[in-house]
Length: 247
Length: 199
Image (tube, rainbow over all chains, first blue to last red; front, side, top):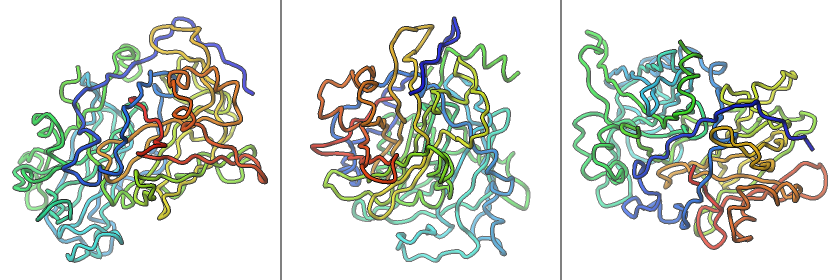
């Protein structure tokens, strides 16, 4: 058995903020799939010790620049509105989260996922797989080129439709920063009936999942531009060292 | 300071399009000397498999070290081993998953500013579970049934009063050959519900 390794003297471990009321509650009857999957017992508080203040700083070795362009993965171009989605990955103190892996997946322009279980009678697009990934740069920036996903029906409630969205997964710098969420598009008429979007308790927090159309990011004659920043939980204790590390 | 944080949303039923890695289950390559295998199933409140989920694991190396700048002990000595610390495995139609890794070492149970003397954490993996029907990942820990003394002294296990609940966090050593196999089922709900943590 390994022996206990002494710590250096005078260390300070980061402690990540614990947002209350930010995420949707796990048990939410409006989203039927929670019924048999949401844990029934209260969560047990886990202090942030060594396993929690660290995390996988992986991805650069498995990502190529081409992975960020979902429109060039096949012989032809996918159908749909070509879009650019870009923004910054930040922490709760406004610091960039550089060098972390972002993975996305989405439906095609007709609202169909390339997945055996998706039986929505809309066409598959042979030129669109719907998966992309990239690493954030030194300023926490990311940028994807894709097509705007379509809305699609699901069986959660009568005449249920998901608003158009792109799934986003962020590894973050440490275990508490791990986040998977969805990005939506401005002005979608389907928000009002969507329990997944509306399960977020604070209406202002819901708005933070909606990208902003930006004519400045829009490339003339080629693609519409959307900007969306993602903010992960912050930590106070490592702010000083991090500033030294990255500046 | 929590102003402006991005809320979580479910991975939905189609995470298989974007998240699994071919080498995800292999924290070390298959056949690495000393490698252990952790297998199990993710089950819902009716005891049915969760076939559209994914688990991720994060852990120390066998010496209890992390290759991460926030570990105040510094990076471990490079030993040429292809140890990634991180595992990822989508669930199969029967809810099953498999992780091949090295047994993590014990850790000084420290937190915050210089709090030493907090004892020792037993070897463990932090686990995230993602699935349709989960608005956010749920987090649990895997401990090992063949570390009874270390488990007895572990502060996280000690924080759970009910021994039946505590037992849901302990992977069972599988007897027989080959050695180094462990079984850890994750029950999202119900009488034998796994302990999940607020991290």
